[in-house]
Image (cartoon, rainbow, N blue to C red; front, side, top):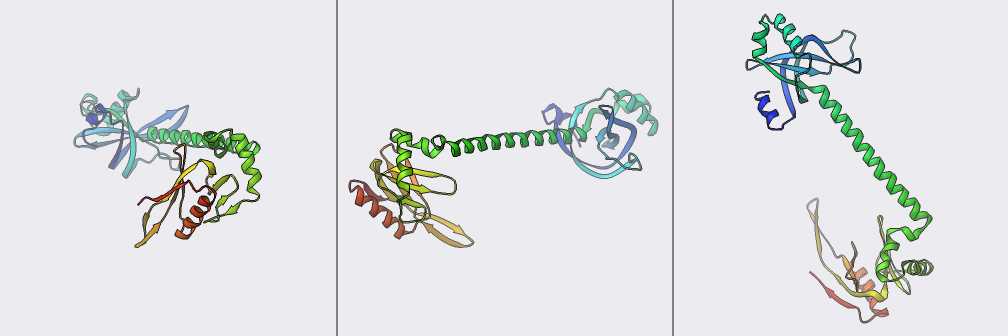
Length: 269
């Protein structure tokens, strides 16, 4: 706890401290008419420090002595009871009031304030997460009621009237054929890629280039190589089909070329 004043002056408002032994002053920290913590004192390197420390509710009341406490706290300017506190403690430790005041730190080490602020931050954090979740849920409901508002459908704006394109994709999906992988489908007009988190609907006539490249992963000492297939359209948008085998790549590429031979192919290592 050395150099607390310097820490506070340098903007270090929150600290973590370890105290070997602290003694109850007889005063309590009252807020809203209720006792929130006991006020303790301790001496360190000849300086008397005052600590606001929550002790909880016990049948025995506030502990007179607390041994070996380590806790986070907030540094605060002296409370209004500071002078009365110094006077009371001076009698307990056989100091004169002025003598104790001369060696007392006028910053309170407030563990209660730290815990209160932490709880407040947690509540605010949960509220933000809940709000984001609610917004996401509303968007999902809207997309379920009217798919034209979903992100995969809006992505079709790059290629024309997205509502018309989506309507065609829905109609053709009933006769779609899986190629290369069970989540990749081709229809008369579209290549459709379905994953756990998204769906890509790509007009075949807008595809200009397909290529694969190598991705190497190391898992439990084993080297695993994947060959993602990239689909590039005339809008320069790149779609990726991951974890596909070489046989699957050949199947997808050959199917696309059978429809649109002008599509460029190549390998990017």
